[in-house]
Length: 120
Image (cartoon, rainbow, N blue to C red; front, side, top):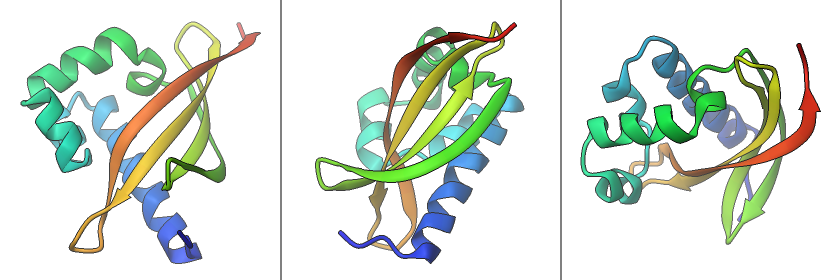
């Protein structure tokens, strides 16, 4: 799948808006950026909130965010980020994106891989 520069900018904007929503504890808005399949998997924004706050601290409360390159994951475009959590742990986040019928982008998954570095 070809990803244009416009698509890349729109994908980045979706991720930034979700991260901003997390910063404001606006889980309804954050949940709205998830793909329909992810929304169905969690069933409600409240279940989504529990998952994010329990397992995705670097996404929920990043101390630092750095956007990196794009890749493909099972034929879906994916944006790589480097995130530092509130305690200084660094992870690579891969946001798998899905193009919707209305030509908007939604987050179809996020995978975190620890990087063996901690910054104090």
